[in-house]
Image (tube, rainbow, N blue to C red):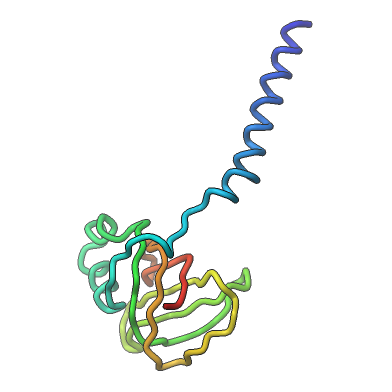
Length: 135
């Protein structure tokens, strides 16, 4: 009987810890990229770095705040309803895909030059930036 109470107590403790971390702690202690120092780079330089040596580019940019400047190629919404911007060159093999934190309308249009700050999360067919905020 004591074993059962002991095991239930441990399971309750583990369950409440997981609940606290998932719903309370992580919501209040998230990364604020906009206050971090960032790496300032053009979209062309960023995509070239990943095309030339992805492993070296990951060492420099992965999970770091970057401020990327480039020409807007597309403005869309992803499946979750977040605004996404593709910046770079229209004839390039790879560009920079940015998911914005705000769903507000963008004042710039396709063909304009834009600067966005966010977190580089690596390279798929395009370099991916998350948590983007327009500067």
